[in-house]
Length: 367
Image (cartoon, rainbow, N blue to C red; front, top):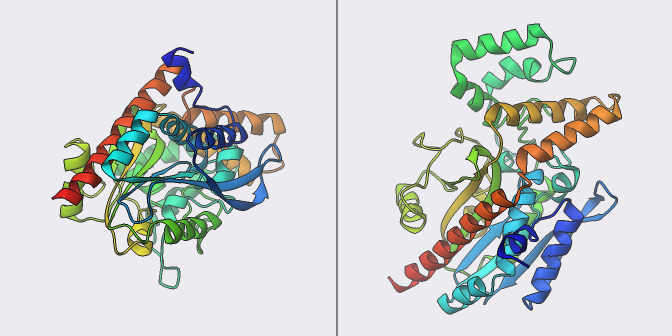
């Protein structure tokens, strides 16, 4: 098998195949899989689970590699995880550095299987990390455009398109991105809904971190995403609180190109309820450093349209099944570029970032 074919073989066409490759790669590496079964079944009637593999001692500095926070984006992250599990040189580098690696496959297995970005609760997992006993943030800008994003009919009519264009003309394209993606808690059938209670994925990941992350003094986390930026480029977005020392450490490890939602350097808007809060909350003893590795796929307009269309069909079960299937396929294609060249670039950048994290964790221990 050529090197190009070997990389392509790490990726899958569906969740069940991806999970099978993850299990096979772990077994070949001599590692056990701990599964946390999901209560529902997948699109093909398959078992769903959040699967966890650990390589290395429990008290060692820990590198967490996670996929499918946003369901359908798991095609990318799973491929990188499988590639790293098959990579003997990477495994040896982590062992020699005294760094443990934790692979968490399919944080949101339901969304992965059904080619949706959200959980079975229609919640964006990366907006679900709140103290739900306290008042939740309001996104009044989303309130203004909710009915325009998901109109009564699909595709939207000229009046809805004109009204949304007028809003953008008044407020700007960046304001639209923030209004849509920042997270909202008042439209449970809308986009980027953060929920009003913890999701299954949120609770299960907390248990994983409690089991695996409470004995390490240093914790690094790379969470794999797709859908923002130029195709094939992996933006390294600091996935941390607004802490100058921590973000400086991330830039020392992963390069000055690490961006931040706090200073406007990232293609991402500033978000609420982000998943990295779990590292601080569940592993408070650890010095935490993390990034989201965000790979570009399609232009932003196509990403937004695919999301709107997918959500519209989810809200209209009476719609034509053929059109629903086409919308689901459009979602997969929007967040997963199924070409050999894209996969090569994704794995190369993922491997580089993982090795940099290993070096950073090991170097922190010697300083």
